[in-house]
Length: 113
Image 1: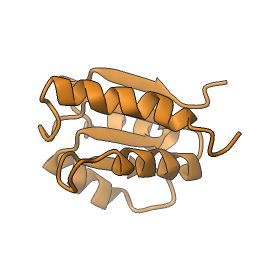
Image 2 (image 1 turned 60 degrees about the vertical axis):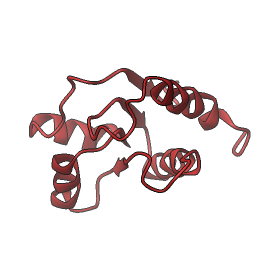
Image 3 (image 1 turned 90 degrees about the vertical axis):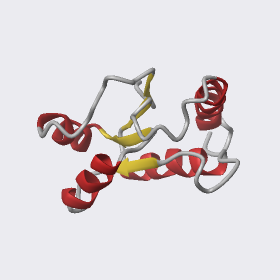
């Protein structure tokens, strides 16, 4: 059911583990969440934003089709900690070489069923 806390069930442990490791704010992608729709991707990002202790604790980028890819590419070049997106647009960024997986610790397939 919508609003039952499913997103929080994976977002909170991710953020807390990254806090323990003191790796938040590194501007390297440490978690990727794949969502089937833009609406869900935005909801996931909103949940991550809600978990911030301060506005600058970490950066979370949401990517999905139907929007220009250049601003997303620019933000990836500046660096983000958590990357949320729909599968098609994430694949676009992978094919363009915009994603650095070297610090990746977690991958979540939201609504993978």
